[in-house]
Length: 420
Image 1: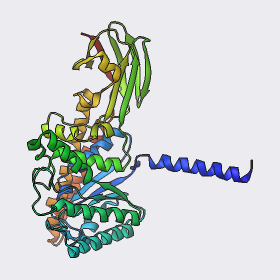
Image 2: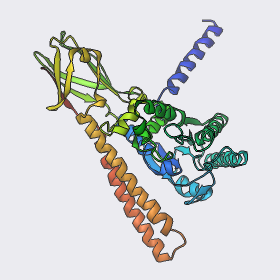
Image 3: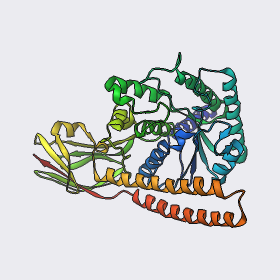
Image 4: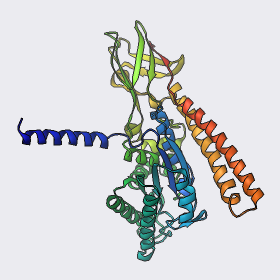
């Protein structure tokens, strides 16, 4: 083989490997993620949704999460202390391998664009990146273009609106990411697009996605989590099963194991998926509207069942003996998304999410109610008592984390399709 041909082949192999890495999920076994930001991060909603997605989609992955948002924060810090204190106590102390940063909502001062205010933001943000990189060499940072101020469902408060200011701040964040070789997630424009679509569907309900125009409810936070996850190359697929009823065989299966298929008047089989669906409360009308107005299901929550070669027109689907719904043969042949149904898998995932919230509540108590007010600048006895209490809360949180990981492990289920 000529040297030039060999070089071309090696370059092609390297290019293929690069694309493969680029498309793989960003988090790795052993990672610790710190979410840093202001009150929107402090709500612990998009962050806990993200955590639960990772636990349920990658149940074998050992990844830890720390939620370090503080209401009112700017790039200079805020109620939790100046930026150096916030970073040292609330980020560096946890030795994260991954950090997300979302700041900007407060930095723009809720007024028309002001060059001097923007310069403070830009310099302060640059200072944060430099400080984090110096303290934690090799850390993987995702900078987040700030979530929107709702000028869609309600009229702007001044000409152009405050979200237009945040869009300019977002552009700076994107440019900073390019310059510093950081990952970037846009939590503004996709949420705005969803708000516009939701407004066209139900204008009154759409206002409740971000009820105070700043702090989203669960529906808005779910969309924000989706954009962060997409920036991490999160996969859409939970599992996919295709059964050929006429041939009495499993035609295809992805991220799952199907066994004991029996095909007669009805179909039964056992199924063990490799992951759980992302739990989404579609009974909440605001969440349902947000999901309907976005690509959340298509992009992140596909747990498909496809059955062809059926003889009857309609079928009842049961999982572990519980009714999941009735479907036409045409629907089943085209494929249904189990992630939209109240399946045992979805209920299990909801339990995982409860444990995500529980361990974060314990950490919040430790951090905001003990560490910050009591651990420093107090008498020796108070400091010792605070340390003992923090250690006890850490132990309690560790127990919840073990339960969370155990709850995320998929279980085997019996499926039954019976003609109506």
